[in-house]
Image (cartoon, rainbow, N blue to C red):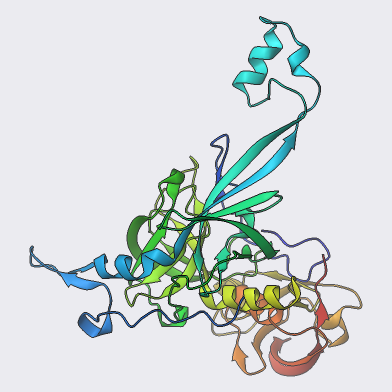
Length: 391
Protein backbone atom coordinates (compact mmCIF):
# COMPACT_ATOMS: atom_id res chain seq x y z
CA UNK A 1 0.00 0.00 0.00
CA UNK A 2 1.44 3.31 -1.06
CA UNK A 3 0.82 6.20 1.23
CA UNK A 4 -1.05 9.19 -0.15
CA UNK A 5 0.85 12.03 -1.76
CA UNK A 6 0.73 14.27 1.30
CA UNK A 7 1.98 11.56 3.62
CA UNK A 8 5.46 11.82 5.00
CA UNK A 9 6.61 8.49 3.71
CA UNK A 10 6.47 7.71 0.02
CA UNK A 11 9.75 5.90 -0.55
CA UNK A 12 11.55 6.22 -3.86
CA UNK A 13 12.66 2.63 -4.35
CA UNK A 14 14.80 0.89 -6.91
CA UNK A 15 12.64 -0.41 -9.80
CA UNK A 16 11.37 -3.81 -8.84
CA UNK A 17 9.44 -6.02 -11.25
CA UNK A 18 7.20 -7.64 -8.66
CA UNK A 19 3.50 -8.23 -8.86
CA UNK A 20 2.29 -8.00 -5.26
CA UNK A 21 -1.11 -9.57 -4.86
CA UNK A 22 -3.21 -9.42 -1.73
CA UNK A 23 -4.14 -12.98 -0.86
CA UNK A 24 -7.90 -12.75 -0.45
CA UNK A 25 -10.26 -14.52 -2.81
CA UNK A 26 -12.84 -12.56 -4.78
CA UNK A 27 -16.09 -13.86 -6.15
CA UNK A 28 -14.72 -13.93 -9.70
CA UNK A 29 -11.48 -15.69 -8.72
CA UNK A 30 -9.39 -12.67 -9.72
CA UNK A 31 -5.99 -12.48 -8.06
CA UNK A 32 -6.24 -10.62 -4.79
CA UNK A 33 -5.45 -7.62 -4.97
CA UNK A 34 -7.09 -4.62 19.74
CA UNK A 35 -8.22 -5.60 21.86
CA UNK A 36 -7.20 -6.33 25.35
CA UNK A 37 -3.98 -8.30 25.49
CA UNK A 38 -4.55 -11.55 23.64
CA UNK A 39 -5.40 -14.28 26.10
CA UNK A 40 -2.78 -16.91 26.58
CA UNK A 41 -3.76 -20.36 25.43
CA UNK A 42 -3.27 -23.30 27.81
CA UNK A 43 0.40 -24.18 28.15
CA UNK A 44 1.29 -26.58 25.34
CA UNK A 45 3.04 -29.86 25.80
CA UNK A 46 6.62 -28.93 25.10
CA UNK A 47 8.88 -30.65 22.66
CA UNK A 48 12.57 -30.17 22.16
CA UNK A 49 13.86 -26.78 23.30
CA UNK A 50 10.39 -25.75 24.47
CA UNK A 51 9.02 -26.09 20.95
CA UNK A 52 5.46 -27.10 20.11
CA UNK A 53 6.69 -28.37 16.76
CA UNK A 54 8.44 -31.53 17.89
CA UNK A 55 11.20 -33.21 15.85
CA UNK A 56 10.15 -35.91 13.42
CA UNK A 57 12.81 -38.42 12.53
CA UNK A 58 13.11 -41.45 10.29
CA UNK A 59 15.47 -40.52 7.49
CA UNK A 60 18.33 -39.40 9.70
CA UNK A 61 17.34 -35.74 9.29
CA UNK A 62 15.33 -34.07 12.04
CA UNK A 63 12.37 -32.08 10.77
CA UNK A 64 9.72 -30.37 12.88
CA UNK A 65 6.28 -31.87 13.31
CA UNK A 66 3.49 -29.30 13.57
CA UNK A 67 0.84 -31.76 14.78
CA UNK A 68 0.74 -30.42 18.35
CA UNK A 69 0.75 -26.81 17.15
CA UNK A 70 -2.25 -27.40 14.88
CA UNK A 71 -4.19 -29.23 17.59
CA UNK A 72 -3.56 -26.53 20.19
CA UNK A 73 -3.71 -23.36 18.11
CA UNK A 74 -5.90 -24.38 15.16
CA UNK A 75 -9.24 -23.83 16.97
CA UNK A 76 -8.37 -20.13 17.29
CA UNK A 77 -8.18 -19.70 13.51
CA UNK A 78 -11.35 -18.64 11.70
CA UNK A 79 -12.72 -18.43 8.19
CA UNK A 80 -14.00 -14.99 7.14
CA UNK A 81 -16.47 -14.30 4.35
CA UNK A 82 -17.39 -10.74 3.44
CA UNK A 83 -20.29 -9.70 1.22
CA UNK A 84 -20.80 -6.44 -0.57
CA UNK A 85 -23.70 -5.34 -2.76
CA UNK A 86 -22.59 -4.43 -6.27
CA UNK A 87 -24.85 -2.11 -8.22
CA UNK A 88 -25.11 -2.94 -11.90
CA UNK A 89 -25.05 -0.37 -14.65
CA UNK A 90 -27.94 -0.43 -17.08
CA UNK A 91 -30.65 -3.04 -17.50
CA UNK A 92 -29.20 -6.13 -19.08
CA UNK A 93 -32.39 -8.04 -18.33
CA UNK A 94 -34.14 -5.98 -20.99
CA UNK A 95 -31.89 -7.49 -23.67
CA UNK A 96 -33.58 -10.23 -25.69
CA UNK A 97 -32.36 -13.82 -25.61
CA UNK A 98 -29.55 -14.32 -28.08
CA UNK A 99 -28.42 -10.70 -27.91
CA UNK A 100 -24.57 -10.66 -28.02
CA UNK A 101 -24.38 -8.38 -24.97
CA UNK A 102 -26.16 -10.98 -22.82
CA UNK A 103 -23.33 -13.40 -23.57
CA UNK A 104 -20.81 -10.63 -22.85
CA UNK A 105 -22.32 -10.03 -19.40
CA UNK A 106 -22.41 -13.75 -18.68
CA UNK A 107 -18.81 -14.40 -19.67
CA UNK A 108 -17.14 -11.31 -18.23
CA UNK A 109 -18.80 -10.92 -14.87
CA UNK A 110 -21.80 -8.70 -15.58
CA UNK A 111 -25.14 -9.57 -13.99
CA UNK A 112 -28.12 -10.50 -16.15
CA UNK A 113 -30.46 -8.48 -13.92
CA UNK A 114 -30.34 -4.83 -13.02
CA UNK A 115 -30.17 -3.60 -9.44
CA UNK A 116 -28.10 -5.04 -6.61
CA UNK A 117 -26.24 -8.34 -6.61
CA UNK A 118 -23.95 -9.80 -3.97
CA UNK A 119 -20.20 -9.96 -4.44
CA UNK A 120 -17.89 -11.48 -1.88
CA UNK A 121 -14.38 -12.09 -0.68
CA UNK A 122 -12.95 -14.91 1.35
CA UNK A 123 -10.15 -14.74 3.87
CA UNK A 124 -8.92 -15.90 7.23
CA UNK A 125 -8.46 -14.50 10.71
CA UNK A 126 -7.74 -15.51 14.28
CA UNK A 127 -9.28 -14.95 17.70
CA UNK A 128 -7.22 -12.87 20.13
CA UNK A 129 -9.62 -12.64 23.07
CA UNK A 130 -12.16 -14.99 24.59
CA UNK A 131 -14.89 -12.37 24.28
CA UNK A 132 -14.76 -12.35 20.49
CA UNK A 133 -12.15 -9.97 19.08
CA UNK A 134 -10.71 -11.21 15.79
CA UNK A 135 -7.75 -9.97 13.74
CA UNK A 136 -7.63 -10.13 9.95
CA UNK A 137 -6.47 -8.07 6.95
CA UNK A 138 -8.10 -4.77 6.09
CA UNK A 139 -8.37 -5.77 2.43
CA UNK A 140 -10.42 -8.85 3.36
CA UNK A 141 -13.30 -6.74 4.72
CA UNK A 142 -12.79 -3.57 2.69
CA UNK A 143 -16.01 -1.91 1.47
CA UNK A 144 -18.20 -4.77 2.65
CA UNK A 145 -21.80 -4.73 3.82
CA UNK A 146 -21.74 -7.94 5.82
CA UNK A 147 -18.94 -9.98 7.43
CA UNK A 148 -19.35 -13.54 8.70
CA UNK A 149 -16.87 -15.38 10.93
CA UNK A 150 -16.91 -19.18 10.90
CA UNK A 151 -15.19 -21.16 13.66
CA UNK A 152 -13.65 -24.62 13.37
CA UNK A 153 -16.70 -25.87 15.33
CA UNK A 154 -18.79 -24.78 12.30
CA UNK A 155 -20.52 -22.08 14.34
CA UNK A 156 -21.03 -18.87 12.37
CA UNK A 157 -21.35 -15.30 13.65
CA UNK A 158 -22.12 -11.97 12.05
CA UNK A 159 -19.14 -9.75 12.81
CA UNK A 160 -18.94 -6.05 13.55
CA UNK A 161 -16.02 -4.20 11.97
CA UNK A 162 -14.44 -2.25 14.83
CA UNK A 163 -11.96 -0.58 12.51
CA UNK A 164 -9.48 -1.09 9.69
CA UNK A 165 -6.13 0.47 8.86
CA UNK A 166 -5.23 0.33 5.17
CA UNK A 167 -1.66 1.53 5.78
CA UNK A 168 -0.77 -1.66 7.67
CA UNK A 169 -3.58 -3.83 6.24
CA UNK A 170 -4.87 -4.71 9.72
CA UNK A 171 -8.55 -4.94 10.68
CA UNK A 172 -10.26 -5.70 13.99
CA UNK A 173 -13.60 -7.52 14.13
CA UNK A 174 -15.93 -8.38 17.03
CA UNK A 175 -18.34 -11.29 17.27
CA UNK A 176 -20.94 -11.75 19.99
CA UNK A 177 -19.54 -14.79 21.80
CA UNK A 178 -17.63 -15.70 24.96
CA UNK A 179 -15.32 -18.48 26.06
CA UNK A 180 -13.74 -18.72 22.64
CA UNK A 181 -10.44 -20.48 21.88
CA UNK A 182 -7.64 -17.98 21.42
CA UNK A 183 -4.23 -18.12 19.80
CA UNK A 184 -1.03 -17.42 21.70
CA UNK A 185 0.70 -14.18 20.74
CA UNK A 186 4.46 -14.37 20.28
CA UNK A 187 7.44 -12.10 19.71
CA UNK A 188 8.49 -11.73 16.05
CA UNK A 189 11.79 -10.29 17.27
CA UNK A 190 12.81 -13.83 18.21
CA UNK A 191 12.46 -15.06 14.63
CA UNK A 192 15.59 -15.83 12.64
CA UNK A 193 15.93 -16.38 8.88
CA UNK A 194 15.88 -20.12 8.24
CA UNK A 195 13.55 -20.81 11.15
CA UNK A 196 10.52 -23.02 10.52
CA UNK A 197 7.08 -21.39 10.50
CA UNK A 198 3.54 -22.53 9.69
CA UNK A 199 0.43 -20.85 8.29
CA UNK A 200 -3.15 -21.87 8.97
CA UNK A 201 -5.91 -20.40 6.82
CA UNK A 202 -8.51 -20.98 4.11
CA UNK A 203 -6.77 -20.96 0.72
CA UNK A 204 -9.39 -21.08 -2.03
CA UNK A 205 -11.97 -21.65 0.71
CA UNK A 206 -10.43 -24.84 2.12
CA UNK A 207 -10.64 -23.86 5.77
CA UNK A 208 -8.01 -24.79 8.35
CA UNK A 209 -5.41 -25.74 5.77
CA UNK A 210 -1.88 -25.98 7.14
CA UNK A 211 1.24 -25.07 5.16
CA UNK A 212 4.81 -24.86 6.43
CA UNK A 213 8.10 -23.31 5.38
CA UNK A 214 10.90 -21.13 6.68
CA UNK A 215 11.52 -17.47 7.35
CA UNK A 216 13.28 -16.14 4.26
CA UNK A 217 14.04 -12.63 5.56
CA UNK A 218 12.86 -9.99 8.00
CA UNK A 219 12.22 -6.28 7.69
CA UNK A 220 11.22 -6.32 4.03
CA UNK A 221 10.03 -2.92 2.83
CA UNK A 222 7.79 -3.47 -0.17
CA UNK A 223 7.43 -1.01 -3.06
CA UNK A 224 3.92 0.03 -2.08
CA UNK A 225 4.58 2.65 0.59
CA UNK A 226 3.58 0.40 3.47
CA UNK A 227 4.70 1.16 7.01
CA UNK A 228 5.24 -2.53 7.65
CA UNK A 229 8.66 -4.23 7.85
CA UNK A 230 7.31 -7.53 6.53
CA UNK A 231 8.39 -11.04 7.45
CA UNK A 232 9.19 -12.85 4.21
CA UNK A 233 8.63 -16.61 4.13
CA UNK A 234 8.40 -19.43 1.61
CA UNK A 235 5.24 -20.77 3.27
CA UNK A 236 2.58 -21.60 0.66
CA UNK A 237 0.10 -18.71 0.87
CA UNK A 238 -2.73 -18.45 -1.64
CA UNK A 239 -5.98 -16.49 -2.17
CA UNK A 240 -8.01 -17.04 0.99
CA UNK A 241 -4.99 -17.16 3.32
CA UNK A 242 -5.19 -13.40 3.82
CA UNK A 243 -5.58 -12.45 7.46
CA UNK A 244 -4.57 -15.85 8.77
CA UNK A 245 -1.85 -16.39 11.39
CA UNK A 246 1.79 -17.24 10.85
CA UNK A 247 3.05 -19.46 13.70
CA UNK A 248 6.53 -20.07 15.03
CA UNK A 249 7.58 -23.54 16.15
CA UNK A 250 6.91 -22.34 19.70
CA UNK A 251 3.20 -22.36 18.89
CA UNK A 252 2.93 -18.57 18.91
CA UNK A 253 1.49 -16.20 16.32
CA UNK A 254 4.33 -14.08 14.96
CA UNK A 255 2.59 -12.52 11.97
CA UNK A 256 -0.51 -12.06 9.81
CA UNK A 257 -0.24 -13.44 6.28
CA UNK A 258 -0.98 -10.50 4.01
CA UNK A 259 0.64 -10.46 0.56
CA UNK A 260 2.30 -12.71 -1.97
CA UNK A 261 4.72 -12.26 -4.84
CA UNK A 262 3.05 -13.75 -7.86
CA UNK A 263 2.92 -13.50 -11.62
CA UNK A 264 -0.11 -15.82 -11.73
CA UNK A 265 -2.19 -14.83 -8.67
CA UNK A 266 -1.14 -18.03 -6.88
CA UNK A 267 1.76 -19.20 -4.74
CA UNK A 268 5.25 -18.79 -6.19
CA UNK A 269 7.42 -19.26 -3.11
CA UNK A 270 7.46 -15.74 -1.68
CA UNK A 271 4.90 -14.51 0.83
CA UNK A 272 4.82 -11.68 3.32
CA UNK A 273 3.41 -11.42 6.84
CA UNK A 274 2.75 -8.41 9.07
CA UNK A 275 4.70 -8.75 12.36
CA UNK A 276 2.20 -9.46 15.13
CA UNK A 277 3.53 -6.78 17.48
CA UNK A 278 2.66 -4.13 14.89
CA UNK A 279 -0.79 -5.68 14.34
CA UNK A 280 -1.56 -5.81 18.07
CA UNK A 281 -0.56 -2.16 18.47
CA UNK A 282 -2.89 -1.22 15.61
CA UNK A 283 -5.73 -3.28 17.05
CA UNK A 284 -5.35 -1.59 20.43
CA UNK A 285 -5.90 1.79 18.77
CA UNK A 286 -8.81 0.51 16.69
CA UNK A 287 -10.53 -0.85 19.77
CA UNK A 288 -10.00 2.36 21.71
CA UNK A 289 -10.98 4.92 19.07
CA UNK A 290 -11.95 3.09 15.86
CA UNK A 291 -9.06 4.71 14.00
CA UNK A 292 -5.27 4.81 13.97
CA UNK A 293 -3.23 7.91 14.71
CA UNK A 294 0.31 7.87 13.37
CA UNK A 295 3.14 10.34 13.04
CA UNK A 296 4.80 11.96 10.06
CA UNK A 297 7.83 14.21 9.63
CA UNK A 298 7.45 15.30 5.99
CA UNK A 299 10.27 13.50 4.20
CA UNK A 300 10.58 11.38 1.09
CA UNK A 301 13.04 8.55 1.51
CA UNK A 302 15.33 6.66 -0.82
CA UNK A 303 17.18 3.39 -0.48
CA UNK A 304 20.71 3.91 0.80
CA UNK A 305 23.00 1.82 -1.40
CA UNK A 306 26.63 1.08 -0.65
CA UNK A 307 27.80 3.38 -3.45
CA UNK A 308 25.68 6.27 -2.20
CA UNK A 309 26.80 5.65 1.38
CA UNK A 310 30.50 5.76 0.49
CA UNK A 311 29.98 8.86 -1.63
CA UNK A 312 28.51 10.55 1.43
CA UNK A 313 31.45 9.47 3.59
CA UNK A 314 29.69 6.65 5.43
CA UNK A 315 31.47 3.36 6.03
CA UNK A 316 28.28 1.28 5.93
CA UNK A 317 25.01 1.47 4.02
CA UNK A 318 22.90 1.86 7.16
CA UNK A 319 20.34 4.59 7.64
CA UNK A 320 17.40 6.29 5.91
CA UNK A 321 18.46 8.58 3.07
CA UNK A 322 16.35 11.74 2.79
CA UNK A 323 15.56 12.36 -0.87
CA UNK A 324 13.16 15.29 -0.48
CA UNK A 325 11.69 17.51 2.23
CA UNK A 326 8.20 18.93 2.58
CA UNK A 327 8.50 22.71 2.77
CA UNK A 328 7.54 23.86 6.25
CA UNK A 329 7.12 20.29 7.46
CA UNK A 330 8.52 18.84 10.70
CA UNK A 331 11.83 17.74 9.17
CA UNK A 332 12.26 21.07 7.41
CA UNK A 333 11.69 22.94 10.68
CA UNK A 334 14.25 20.66 12.34
CA UNK A 335 16.94 21.60 9.81
CA UNK A 336 17.03 18.28 7.94
CA UNK A 337 17.99 18.60 4.27
CA UNK A 338 17.95 16.34 1.18
CA UNK A 339 21.04 14.14 1.21
CA UNK A 340 21.03 13.73 4.99
CA UNK A 341 20.96 10.20 6.39
CA UNK A 342 18.92 9.59 9.56
CA UNK A 343 20.77 6.96 11.58
CA UNK A 344 18.85 6.82 14.88
CA UNK A 345 15.65 8.03 16.47
CA UNK A 346 15.32 8.38 20.24
CA UNK A 347 18.36 6.14 20.62
CA UNK A 348 16.93 3.37 18.42
CA UNK A 349 19.07 2.53 15.38
CA UNK A 350 17.68 3.27 11.93
CA UNK A 351 19.28 0.89 9.46
CA UNK A 352 16.71 1.05 6.65
CA UNK A 353 13.86 3.23 5.41
CA UNK A 354 11.50 0.61 6.87
CA UNK A 355 12.95 1.25 10.33
CA UNK A 356 12.32 4.98 10.10
CA UNK A 357 8.80 4.53 8.70
CA UNK A 358 7.94 2.16 11.54
CA UNK A 359 9.41 4.36 14.28
CA UNK A 360 7.87 7.62 13.07
CA UNK A 361 4.55 5.99 12.22
CA UNK A 362 4.36 4.63 15.76
CA UNK A 363 5.16 7.97 17.37
CA UNK A 364 2.32 9.92 18.95
CA UNK A 365 1.58 13.06 16.94
CA UNK A 366 2.58 16.22 18.78
CA UNK A 367 5.47 14.58 20.59
CA UNK A 368 9.15 15.40 20.07
CA UNK A 369 11.81 12.92 19.03
CA UNK A 370 15.58 13.16 19.05
CA UNK A 371 17.20 12.29 15.73
CA UNK A 372 20.82 11.58 14.90
CA UNK A 373 21.87 12.04 11.31
CA UNK A 374 24.82 12.11 8.99
CA UNK A 375 24.86 15.47 7.29
CA UNK A 376 27.52 16.94 5.02
CA UNK A 377 30.20 14.58 6.28
CA UNK A 378 29.50 14.90 10.01
CA UNK A 379 27.24 13.46 12.69
CA UNK A 380 24.58 15.86 13.93
CA UNK A 381 21.64 15.73 16.31
CA UNK A 382 18.32 17.53 16.12
CA UNK A 383 14.84 17.40 17.60
CA UNK A 384 11.73 16.91 15.48
CA UNK A 385 8.16 17.70 16.51
CA UNK A 386 6.06 14.99 14.90
CA UNK A 387 2.88 15.90 13.00
CA UNK A 388 -0.11 13.63 12.43
CA UNK A 389 -0.51 11.75 9.19
CA UNK A 390 -3.99 12.37 7.87
CA UNK A 391 -5.96 10.74 5.14
